[in-house]
Length: 83
Image (spheres, rainbow, N blue to C red):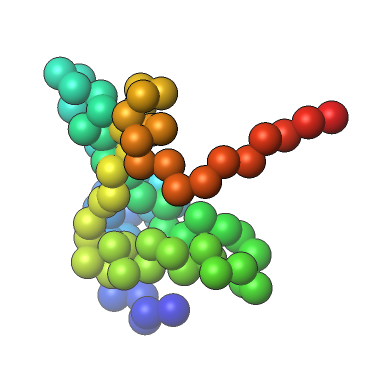
């Protein structure tokens, strides 16, 4: 992991405080952007563990649309949960 260089919890670059950032323009929620640093998994052995590390280092977000249709357009996979 990168060294702690920004401990201001009010910014996207903070390694100390930010755990999830989401920007939603109210005029078009499908233009929403988000970031879950440093990745989409908490398990160190999973490839998704550091999937957003580069975005986080650069202080950038990725698309996170909110309507089902927009999510379906960018989906890369699907998991169906059953009992």
